[in-house]
Length: 150
Image (cartoon, rainbow, N blue to C red):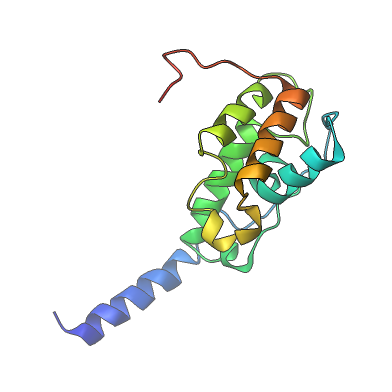
């Protein structure tokens, strides 16, 4: 295939993707509650490493307006807020704060793909342990069962 046609087709596809509005609203709903943090340090570490996906205080970077990255960013934020959202603490239904420490301890949070674009979210070993201890003190901890050990 002609490389020029391939490039032209790629540019056209990217341009058409921009017409799909999903992931471009960048809503940060008003906070309806907040946890009683065990310490200012826990709050500081959480805000540095977790708040973009687990609060209504998301900082939407410039690339979150360009499809298809905007779609992935929206999915990640929506999923994160749906599982655990400190801006809606005390809401009806699920808010899985008791799982937060385990996710950080296992290295699942923050996710590896988030860190290159957000180097401030990378925690050293001491900070990670501080955050885990603070999350346990703030939210408690759900001990993982064999079923939860993926």
